[in-house]
Image 1 (cartoon, helix red, strand yellow):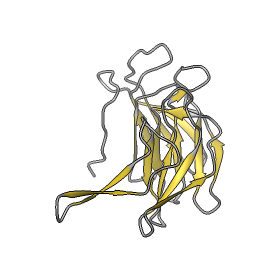
Image 2 (cartoon, rainbow, N blue to C red):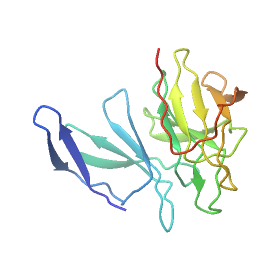
Image 3 (cartoon, one colour):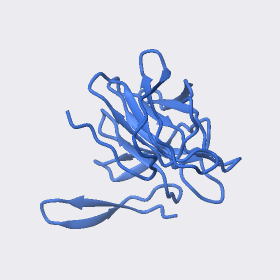
Length: 180
């Protein structure tokens, strides 16, 4: 795991080192917040941290923020229309199994709160915000490391998940994007 960070300049095609995170991380997630800060959370390792940090581009520094309820890696992290960040699923450090729990990060308070759990445990899945503000989670691996074709929708207004149509093929470590 590395704690270093680098910035890419598309105008010059060069990379520049910037401030270092407080802990080395791998298999973690990152999101840009409405205030311009970057939130990183989770990691894989001997002990999977539940810690989270914020990167400030103007100062090039990292600062710790509230910790997640569950230490996890291989999860998804999605910025919602209301500015909150949804973290879903991943691998739990205590069991080494895929989990179905989800949490919301509030950038105004720097705190995490639990929200509804997915119906299926999953890690290595994808999550995208749809035009209506809901979050589509698809695929991944379950606790027995079987590849999934199932999908679920998260409703930010109610904090609940509903099962939606399955993909034709099971997959994990894939990508997903909204096209319209």
